Image (cartoon, rainbow, N blue to C red; front, side, top):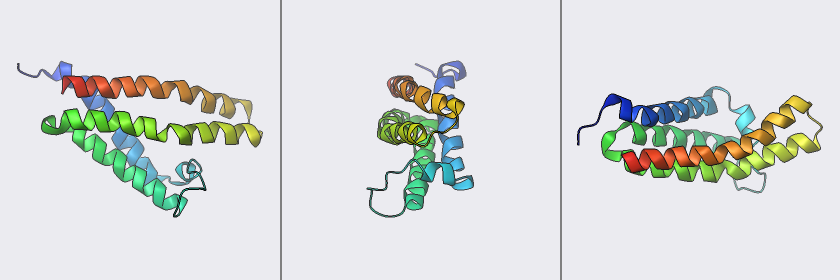
Length: 127
């Protein structure tokens, strides 16, 4: 069955989202550093750069048709893997009394992870 550009649009959009986020890990690492639990070994910056590399690699896997199924699965696992960091951010914002808008955004990010996982699995299934 031939692939049409329209049917691959979700894959390209997901790859674009991941590539943008991955690049931001290098261009503006400080906000990402704050998501890394201090209990993890090594420096927060190393985890930030490592996760940026992972996001860029997953994006590349999704763009390439031969690796799209694996890339979609990797994206789903990545979204699940970063969920604890998003929980940490929401809790930190709450504890530190950040402005209400920032706290609301942090908490609203949590349920958004699950549609991202579903999107990644859809890309995998269409790959």
